[in-house]
Amino acid sequence: MPPRLFGTDGVRGRAGDYPLDRATVARIGAAVIRALPHGAVEPRVLVGRDTRESGGWIVEELERGIRSEGGRLTSAGILPTPAIAYLTKAMEFDAGIVVSASHNPYEDNGIKVFSGDGEKLDEEFEAHIEATIHDEQWRVGEPKTPPAEAHDLVAAYIAHARTAVPDLAPLRGLRLAIDCANGATTTVAPRLFGELGLEVTLLGHTPDGRNINLGCGSTHPDALSRAVVEGGHRLGVAFDGDGDRAILVDHTGRVVDGDAVMYICAKFLKAHGELRGDAIVATVMSNIGLEIALGRLGLALHRTPVGDKYVAAAIAEHQLSLGGEQSGHIIFSDFLYTGDGIVTALNVLRVMGETGHELADLASEFVAYPQVLVNVRVRERRPIEEVPAIRAAMARVEERLADNGRLLVRYSGTEPLLRVMIEGQDQQEIEAWANEIAGAVRAALG
Image (tube, rainbow, N blue to C red; front, side, top):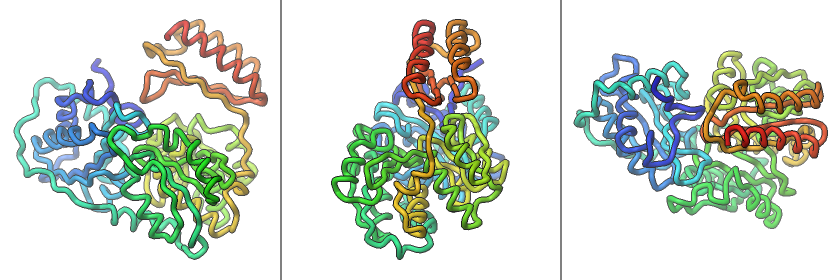
């Protein structure tokens, strides 16, 4: 069976190496057109990218493949992933493509594909594209359509995002620090938050093709925390490289993750009659404290595998308003069925503005259980149940946890890592137990 190309968030790898070598990227572009429902004459595709130096040539190869199958390409240039998702649907494109590797280093890149509805592809559609790519009976041919057209679509996305904050008056002059991760939000965030009348301090806003996520952004919030405190800001927001996630910092410099944000927004939306179904969606990685806190509000929590496409599918299935991941991918389905860091920040600003409370006070109502996450690099992805030493270590830890915590061991969807996550009542204990399992993993698979 040919290898899977799509992980939990599109096709991802080191730029220049398979499957992100030039020939395969062109085949991906062609395969997307081939896999679209029949009927469209010259199917229209919108493409955007982040700031990685490899993004330019990857878009060129995608264009070569798309045009070879009669597709028309519109390039939006550097724009966040959620902007492409929104604009694909709003402007009636047949598909949208984002070239980005999210929070990964600049050497990596990726290809995310959205349907004409602005939603990430389901696994059946991904499998169809993969089968087409692996079919050796066809080759990428000569272009059949004109070259790509470039359009500035920043204003159209900003107009959509601004609707998240109906009343701007309480926010005028608020001091806000933003870390754009030297990524895709550099084209949107400074302009948007400035237009809202906020006093904005910028970090990570000078991309050079290689500094995306480098010591900045949602995976490195320390500099933002310092800037918030030293500058007397009420809030800090750190985006990742493609802008589909946001991690927040309160005025004391404390990091507020996606679990706390979901709790804050769920409570607010419930009080305003805007939370459909009295429930939200989160992944298996979300802290058990979220489940407990929501229960006190009479709200349920539906869990999914890791990946915002699974969160989006569960939100649609249960017809809910809100869901997300601890990492900061938050989906507000009234706006979009994919994570949007800017819309997340705007929703938190709305809560702060309408309640008059600081983020620190809003987040204090959510108490997370002690949690430890250990990532172990592996040389192969053998099923855990087939490795006796790992299985035995897990059984020992589960017996110690009893009903007072949670153990989750899973492979990363985008990197050669096995993640060991434990929640429990004592930080030192769970760290020791996580390292015990990690040691078994290194011995067997490292």
